[in-house]
Image 1: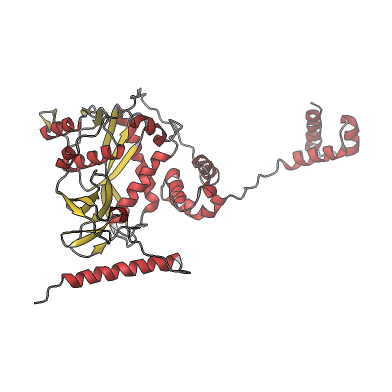
Image 2: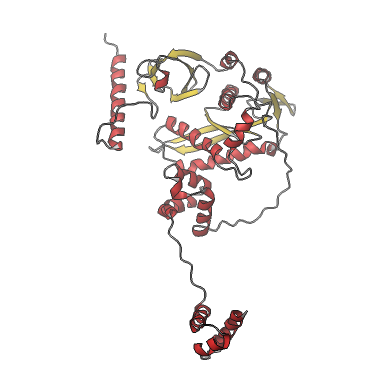
Length: 413
């Protein structure tokens, strides 16, 4: 109270340009004259300007600004940096977002007038929502533009996601993606919910007709199919929200050297969302999935699943951790040496599974040569050899192997 009166008197004297006797005011208010001096300077000069504290995030200032100007979301920028640095540098996402909002741009947006859409929660194991995300475009390091589709599936209770690159939007691809999803989940939900995609329904005379082959497929999978109301996509809002994760791919434009690396990278990047705190649930989907997984129904018989996967054949992995298929050789993890694996060929790719139909590797279809996915070609690193030189040596070895295979394939007449 005394200091408030002091500040008021100092302010009046400063405004009227009156002289101020610090010692006299100190006796009047019963405080030290240095206190009077400090209050005088604060009122005259205003509060001190808060200095920007040095943060490790500032090391990425140029990149953050550039990506913000390109329209990338804060979340996608955070995940991109986190994949290349450490948690110690960036801290939590909330810390990163607060820092970016404070120093890099004004994050305020005008509120929108929305019609309320009342929601409900599904019990564990009850529902899986799925959808396509179409025509995603990313460039390779050589500038080539790659356009692809994405399968997006989300469990209603835990919000556990499963993303998979889809070659096309056909009925066969939908079945393949669904089977991959339930194998990844380790079980089958009671119902599935999706929109009126052409892979599932046809519209005749203004009415929806589910394809008979689709009806039989979900019957064999032990699942009940439910369709969203026409033009009411928000009824599958949980998977619609998960589709927004594709924005996280923007910072990786031009970062992958091949289509295969891009496809594998996209799936890995997006599926990381299962281990991040959900802003609504306040826990990671992977945490709730541990509870939900036990409520899922058992997978269909393995022979039933294989019957829906086109062109599935068996191969035995050789001592070089390779399988041969139609003139080309493809690498698999070394633990599969001398074991049988399954190969499925599509128009563009070769998919390799273990006997339980768990995905092992994916390759672009080749007609010759030896091909190892990243990390599958294992040779010893030399003493004092830099990591960069080690990677170059691996690439050179793979090129020589491919060249040797081409020579072997030449016929001499």
